[in-house]
Length: 320
Image 1 (cartoon, rainbow, N blue to C red):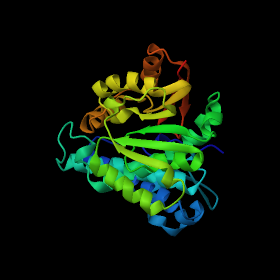
Image 2: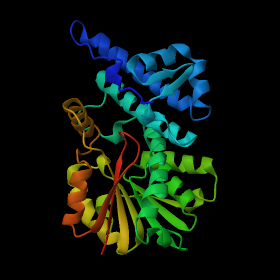
Image 3: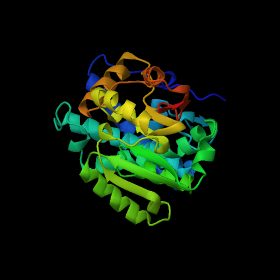
Image 4: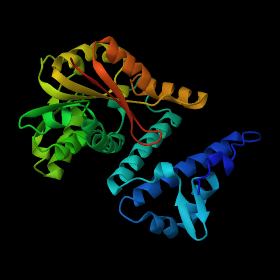
């Protein structure tokens, strides 16, 4: 049985009062976020049955179909485990909070992450844990020699823009012999990261070192077995400045893994991606452009790894 696309159930009506349709879609997004968050700790079937009004909104917009008495959520949101479901919910909640801030006139153009409140930073950071788990389970095993490198005592990973260190912690949990160095330019977010690591209280958290540093100032040579770079969070100028330094920081044969956005498939999402990037002090590079940039710097064996539908695309390349 195939899952219908939203357009087969719901059509975007902008004829009379477009704002009412857009508002209804906002509520549909809220229903999706709340459902994914609940599904992190409860069976999805129970979550859908427990809140029939919320579930009816998802059905009306085409994200749920019925097979007799069985409710089936769109396959894009059928995640393999609770943590991944929660990460997806937190990522969308962070985006929704930023949209509300934009509607309220808060945070002018190029306000950047420094102007976000702590709750947005926490939500965005916790969502990145899912990307860390995807990198550990899907990307690292597919890159020649990297799993063996990270299994060796004393191996090192650099986490650029570590935020609240959720991704760093996910990598530390996945690779018990690796030391993770997380750098961030915002002291305020590093304080949040210290609290998150202290609350975790695990052995893995003890292998995460935090540094207040700008990626453009990285000066280590041949120091890391893997570098993680969340490209959308850097300005284009910062990305151009940072990449040569990060490549020099790789050991020979080591890998850089770059988180990127997928190419937007339509004009609306392209326009939103551009506005979002400018507001957050980022850039609009997509996976294809990052891949071409890495090969231009002399890296080799480039590969692209989609994560979840609509989610980040991870681009990996190896230093010769």
